[in-house]
Image (cartoon, rainbow, N blue to C red):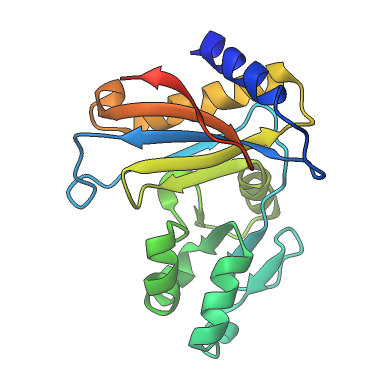
Length: 208
């Protein structure tokens, strides 16, 4: 796939320049899968990070390592409008294990469908509010991507056009492999793979 990604990038770079820095996007269209029966999520980190995610923590006490701390006392006083705004403002949410029941009941209906609930499988739920544990979790999530398929397609930004081709290709390859490996039947669940710039038409690079 790397050679095909390179060919697509070369073609896209030949298009007329815009007056802003565009993003390269990867689109993976799926087939032969019922997402209601087989929900698909993918979690990975880019080899070449191009942005830092904003992290919100549900923690017993304030912690400067996250962009915002929501304590147990605050959890019970937040209204629905605030919950919706908070869910949009942050890319990842982590939680102390002791607060997860409250987080699930108060934030679950909003964060769940967005794929943003603190996830113990990827280290988003900490058993102890130790500084080194919180720092390690936050550092990992700063450069990570979590995707949840809501329809038969994944679309993810993988870099800026100001980046080197090699960096874009490695990010594309990393994202594609993570998505493919998250599928029940791997490549057999992929209908097509496309690459595009923010304002360009997509270029097909595979598979079926």
